[in-house]
Image (cartoon, rainbow, N blue to C red; front, top):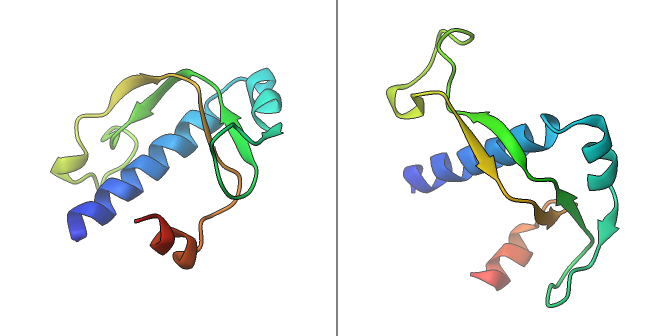
Length: 95
């Protein structure tokens, strides 16, 4: 269970870093809500494609765990993500 939580936190961090590292124009474009075909629930927003740093940067953070290294750049294609958090009830219906 602990590994799933770490993986989930890393994915959330990657998403947030990718979103916040986008240019101002991309951020404005990402703020537009959509309801892609075949999806359920609330509105989604577009996270633009781009590169971001993943992992713990030991030059900036003195408390990096070994499993968070090495810090590296990755590229993600654009994707849609829920605008609002998923409740435990909604998650339970999904899994």
